[in-house]
Length: 395
Image (cartoon, rainbow, N blue to C red; front, side, top):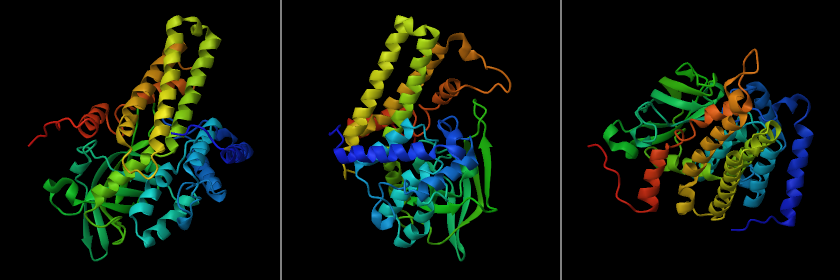
């Protein structure tokens, strides 16, 4: 694992840092620090415009091959981009699901026609995507999805329900895991990965209001929603393989940007502890130190995992990532409230909006549940990394 950056990398760091400083001004100045987890509903139109600005400048798809319109930057410079973006408090990315999940999936599993049709909209920031995986009876157990797609003379017809779909209310497209063989008992062998437009009569979106008062997740109902016959990625029945490939791309260089956002939150907590005097409490100081250490562990583990370029299986180091950061971030939320003290339970005044730290604390309640609960993560580690017997499944 190489934790040092070359002279060329540092030149690139200056390039992206300078571009961000020059562009997060004027109409985009108010986007700094907005639109992250727990605030993803904020400034939708403005952040869509920001996506288009990123696309115009070639800052979308920096790790994708040049042959499909990407910049094919080395891993070190991808890491630098995401770190500098977070350091500049760039807004939460509207297009991150399309860029970070679907685009590499299309490169690895999609046809040339699918790449030519869908990648340009992702790369220029004009097409926003969401992920249609979870269902009321199939959260962490993805193979249990019941949404169905049937092929007719005019293409595919989708019927079913998805839930906890991030950004569905403002997305143009969705990649949907659905059952195409008609036999629920076949589980993962009967799944397909279908690209479906969200702007059509057969798609109903119902936002889910969270404890923060926001609604960045939604239920999505498909009622004879249509999809083109050639919208299946990887072939009919190959949905499980493609879906697992998509999930693997979540471990990309953007994880370093996530950690820089964590650093921004920790810096805000430290500044508050210094300002209100709670930094003199030895227990608070110890918890701050533990948070700092935990963040460094995340960074080095991410660099170690990402250094295995070309390895589709990141090994045991990669399997602990979600469990570690979810618990760490939940504890950081608790630390933030303890540093705020009694003020943590108060809103400053009308319209009684939550502060950034209050919102962060509430949102971190979900970190250990979404994208695979802690219990599921421990099963994965025990069975796949440690080789322990599988947990008994109901017959």
